[in-house]
Image 1: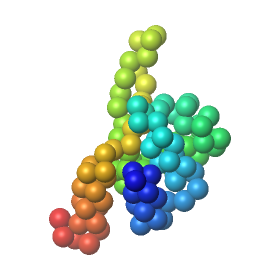
Image 2: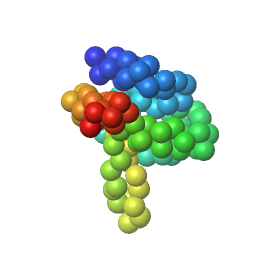
Image 3: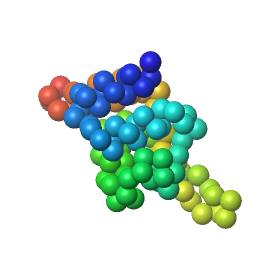
Image 4: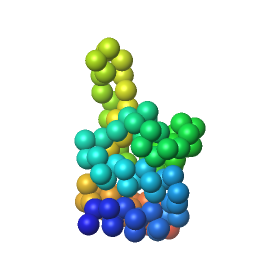
Length: 101
C-alpha cells in the first residue's frame, strides 16, 4: 500500500524515472539508505541521484537524517516518511502553491 501511495504522489508531482525509482527503493528499505547505496541500487549516476534527491526533499517526499559513520564522519541517511507525513507534506505544498496557506 505504501508503494502505491508513493507512485500516486509521484504522478501528482510529475516525478518519473530516477526519482520514482528512488522512492520505490526507499519504500523497500525502511531503515534508510545513503547516497552511495542509492546510486548502487538505482544504477544511476551520483549526479542524477543527487539532483533527484534535492527535488524530492523540496517536495518533502523524503526525510534526511544525519548519522555518524563508524569512522566518525557525518553521513546523510535518506528515509521514506510515513503515509501520514507524506499526506501532511502534500497538503502543505498544495496550500503553498494555491496560496491558501
